[in-house]
Length: 203
Ligand SMILES: Nc1ncnc2c1ncn2[C@@H]1O[C@H](COP(=O)(O)OP(=O)(O)OP(=O)(O)O)[C@@H](O)[C@H]1O
Ligand SMILES: [Mg+2]
Image: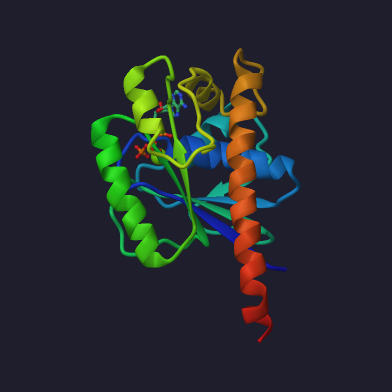
């Protein structure tokens, strides 16, 4: 059985790595994957989420730990906010906020991913299209880049130990639609990578 893996990384804090990692884990579980969410951040955003879920008796459809769970066919790594030499994922998902400080870290982050020669899925996060500044930065991304709007549901769901898929909070439908668009892009990127890699593996 082949195991695909995703590193959710940007070398800046608070851009949504844990939020995206947790909700991608939920999205891919819904699509039939056996997901192991691996928390590589000493600040433990995903592990804290899992401990909240446990305390509140919320069953998660994926495992969360410090290492890959046996039997998983999809590993999602939730990274800390550091510039690093390498990431374990086959592809990198990079959430970024659109303020100048975040964007100026996002750009060298993407260059590092290029050096690694790994596919990148950029995810503009906490987007507010009523702000001209956000609209201007969004224009710098590839057209049709899926993005996540600024929505209170992410923090509220986290505090309940639930993904946006499993909660009953307002804004759920719209948030899921956005996360599904991100998940579609991530899935397509993984599929392209594994299709391209197949002949090399067979050789
Ligand atoms: N799309 C969004 N809309 C509103 N709030 C969001 C969104 N994405 C993330 N947040 C909130 O932003 C805060 C930071 O998100 P998160 O913890 O996922 O970032 P992080 O990159 O993992 O941070 P760290 O580098 O500290 O691990 C959290 O309170 C989270 O709920
Ligand atoms: Mg985090």
